[in-house]
Amino acid sequence: GGDGGGDGTEAEPPFDVSACHAPVTPKGQVAELFGNKTYAGVLLSTDRGATWQPHGRLSDPRTDLIEGVALELSDRVLMLFRTKIGCVFAAASHDSGRTWSVAAPLNVPNPNTKFDAIVLQPYSDTILMALNNHRRGVFC
Picture 1 (cartoon, rainbow, N blue to C red):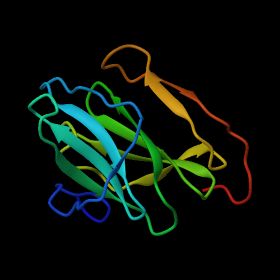
Picture 2 (cartoon, helix red, strand yellow):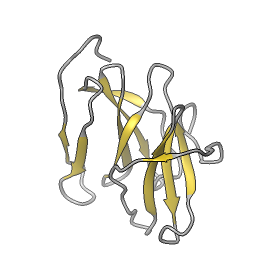
Picture 3 (cartoon, one colour):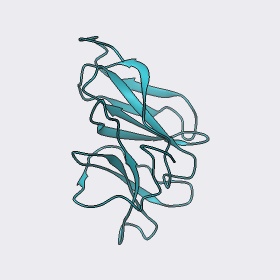
Picture 4 (tube, rainbow, N blue to C red):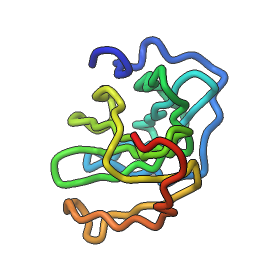
């Protein structure tokens, strides 16, 4: 996709692989989230983790995209991030994580604190989030 999205060809080590949710796609790919000081994305494996390919180069000039959570919904994979500017950001993939939309702010306040999210039923669109929704400073 455009600025902030990518086909994975631009991603370069070093990666800090997060300990966040990493879904297995319907096609059997294993996904692990990565991030560094500049951008975030996913590492995909089609051979049960023997090799990994980076996909996505998600970033925003206003903030870092921190500690992503990937959720497999009915028609897309959604990645949510905490940020330093007062709200949660999101990016979506409609091809099991190979390409991503531009990361954009959601109307979900978060004062730069860790959150978690799950899909309540597999491949549904009902998301449950546990987060600190305190508004501190300017809200996105």
